[in-house]
Length: 492
Picture 1 (cartoon, rainbow, N blue to C red):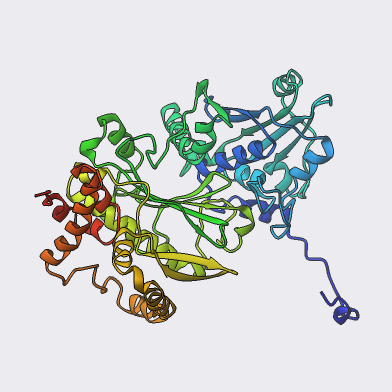
Picture 2 (picture 1 turned 30 degrees about the horizontal axis):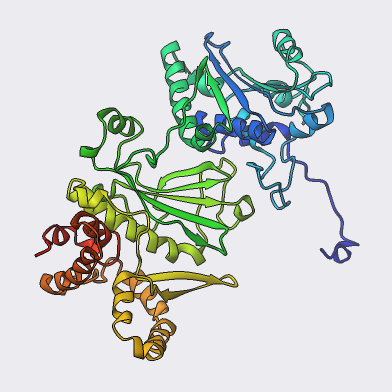
């Protein structure tokens, strides 16, 4: 920055008033669920293996407490952690850091309570503790950015009996206990707690499933809830796609039809908002779910896409590119990736619709993990392009018919690859969405069947069963769009 151009300019400090700024920080849009998740993020970054969360009802004296067995903080470290904006969002962070703005602990806590206390202890060090009290910090005679060196005796005792870790206590829960000046009931309080627990089950499910983290919520162990139902035999995974030179990982799943699931599993999805609501992209950063069930503006939710869910994994250095917000509940893909993601979404929705409409017939739910696309997306030096998948069974079979013309065929393929009208396709799709023909939409069914039969009979001659041959067909473009025709095939 050129500091000299302001050398002779008058300046004046413009520190924001503590009272108005703190009250503003309370209104960033946190819900109890997203606020609790932010506190858990801090514990994970502190290398905690166990986290205890307790919602304790006592009317207006109710409190919420968080305890972890992480590395803990020294007094200087805790004071820095209590400071709003304790780190710049532009500073490069450790790869496992789940924060970015240095605001999470403060804004999450302020959003739900007027008093929060943090006690911490590093191994072989004394306990340290500091408190924010908004009523004190915003009072006319004490207004300022001042934290208090105070904690409740029972919390100090608990911290002293702990080898290492941190404790966060939320008190004066005005945003939870009082709604429109009406005090909620004990049942309402624990209904909020139940909703928070469900949120934790999903947001941190990958940590919980692998045993990296154990969370005890009001005395009960929290089990991870996997939105992709990877443990179900009828779930259909697509191959993982790598974007941004491998930094962004995308993997689609087609969930089983209702007829292929146990009733309790189906109802669990219904309790979490319903199958229609849960479709879409799920964006993770460092295995922590940021955004769930959102088509990212690429399409709208429709009932026949209800079985489509797509996982996106991001590293934390792409936060700004993806517009990750303070609450870690919003993300938007950069323009350079939107078309790639739309391609994945369309392929996933197409297959999901087939499973939904055909009630998960055997040929549908046997989709191989090695799905064969006709076109492969490639990335080099940060730029993407497309190549024909010459390992696709249809293409490979046709090339094999002309062994003496291999060079000529390769030249022809190269010309096709280098002249893909990408800009025109994108422009047409943006101007006239959903107007492009589906593969073979205008081709007579006998022509499609003829292509299918050639492969189908060839595989059976090589020793595959009829069922396996059908599975192979339904796991490749363009035949995956026509399961009803695949069903009609027979080896005669």
